[in-house]
Amino acid sequence: MKVAVVGGGVVGLSVAWAAAVAGHQVQLIDAAPGSGASWVAGGMLAPVTEAWPGEEHVLALGSASLDRWPDFAARLDKNGGLRTEGTLVVAVDGADRAELDGVADFLAKLGREVTRVTAREVRRLEPSLGTSVRSGLLVPGDLAVDNRVLLSSLRKAAVEAGTQPIAVAATSVSAGEVALANGSTVECDVVVLAAGAWSGGLYNGLAKVVRPVKGEVLRLKARDGALDPPTRTVRALVEGRQVYLVPRDGRGLVLGATQYEAGFDTEVTVGGVRDLLRDAERVLPGIGEYAVLECAAGLRPGSPDNLPVLGWLEPGVLAATGHHRNGILLAPITAEAVVDLLAGREPPEPARAADPGRLLAVTNGGG
Image (cartoon, rainbow, N blue to C red; front, side, top):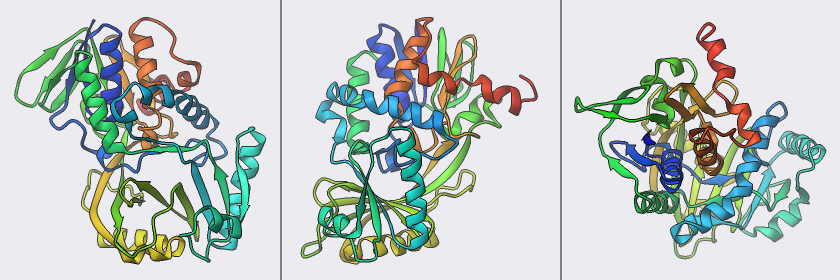
């Protein structure tokens, strides 16, 4: 079939690559592929440490996608930027520790692999962490990826598989057609809408389903004489606030992320930078000696229940959007589900909970 994928972030690129490998004629429509939230992201592959009671479907989908990540990465140049050192979750005060214990109990009931560690064990694992850290959870199965290496690798793989890039913004999608900003149209058999936070503006049925959720992220580097960054991803609770520190090659560190309901605002605020650095310094005291390389904000595509919107919107229009914080994590299973749907097959079982029908009937008054 002729397939037009609208959106060139991690999800859109993964879908385009998989669809092209499956034998479809694929066009990828994005004025600036590899930008947006995918470019700003920290790159955590962390279904377990993001798990929360009441979101069991989110955990199941994320875990199923994480299982696919090693093979997914192995087929990409530079192993897709995959990092396998694991994740350490830490708490700073008593209330944070109690919340961490609650998460650990919840995960233990679900049979997930987590190990409680003391403050002393935390600093043995990661010597650069400070004495304010009270306890932790070691989660070796939650991984990370260098998102910018991944984007480059996916673009290369998609093009080599036969994907044709169209560097023009889409203005709307409908069955069999994508309208472009230059006044032209792309005709196809199926449109796959993977435009992240902008999806709701391209297809009316998603206007009340997918929304932008702003997140600010800093990219830092340890200067000469500064303590090395942690070797693992560190997710911290600091007086109820969440902050993450994701290592990069060359003594780099990604620090994030704020979370605001601020529409399509992508300006970085002084308050956001201050809050990230204040909380990070409680966990990693030596961060004050790091160099600031970049401050950026991205727009996560949120959905009402934190599951993505993955499935048929109508004949000829497939949704692969609304992944919120988990677009990179869910890229492998999303691409697999889209290829299955294009072939008339049922998607993987964990992906079925993400069918758009669960939301469209509620948000659009019955259909």
